[in-house]
Amino acid sequence: MLTSRRRFIGALSVGTASALLPATTFASIGKADPVKRIILDSDTATDDALAVLMAVTSPKLKVEAITITCGNVGFDQQTKNALYTIQLAGKNGQVPVFQGSARPLVRQVHGNATYVHGSDGMSNSFFPDPQQKPEKEHAVDAIIRLVDKYPNEITIVAIGPLTNVALALLREPSIAKKVKELYFMGGFYKFYGNINPGATYNAWVDPEAARVVFQSGIPITTVGFDVSVKSSVFTDDDYAKVEKLGTKYADFFMKINRIRRKYCKEHQKMNGSNHPDAITIAAVIDPSIVSLSVSRFVDIETRGELTLGALAIDELGVWGKPPNATICVEADEAKFKKMVFDTLKMS
Image 1 (cartoon, rainbow, N blue to C red):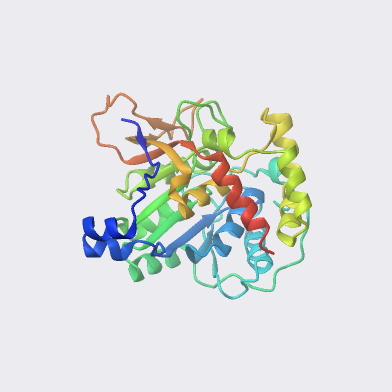
Image 2 (tube, rainbow, N blue to C red):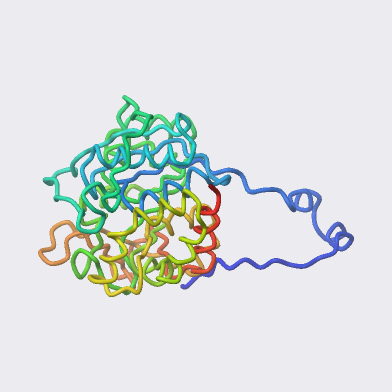
């Protein structure tokens, strides 16, 4: 059944509200939502960097850790990209970065996606080395420690392959019941893949890891490639508006998207660049950005010759299993873009 997350806001006078609402309900009106504790698991390149910037500058999030997973470009380079973005945001020493697994669970390293992100993962911007260094603790240990420290409070936001999360679950299965929720940037709903016709990059890089996570029992929300294509594309007009902002964040956005912008236009038939990682973190910051979703049972294809890494969504319930994922179907493009512009205006 399709479910909508559109909020209904009733307009009541103070006198009417105090007469009709319980005291506890009335007292809660106007209170800010509690700050969410998150672990951001990332293979930091262009779009991941925007997501990192949005996360560490959001007053609605407390980024307990950024954990680096295998993925877009060289492992150490991904780490530097995350650290540089933290430094750009003025958060040196406030957001720890932990290196995780530099390879998938059982497969060889797939290569890289420098054709999308440039050799440095940042559209060949070659930023200086960041001042902050990665922590000595392994990312998998950090995930387990933080989930144990804050049971039922941690949201894991996985915007890269799921290797680190799977390793944490394999080492300490009990954390599955302690993770509040997991947002995964991957898959699609009645759309098409960007790495093969049935799969998207993050699940394809390490399908075995994705399967471990989806079978773990953690409440999962997916924000897929389809949503990013429909609701996160920055057009030439959007880029012109960003350039006019004249801030250091806007300059950063323009630099890191040079190669990605061209790739999306020439090879993915978009009228600009999509930002799947950014719209995923946006949905964590403001869940109302997800305007339509479905609950389904999802498994991962690990042996398909043509569809490796596909999220197999049981649309008709033929497997007879209860849903294990909430799949974002539609998102509010205007809300997303406003959030990005509000972030880029900050500096």
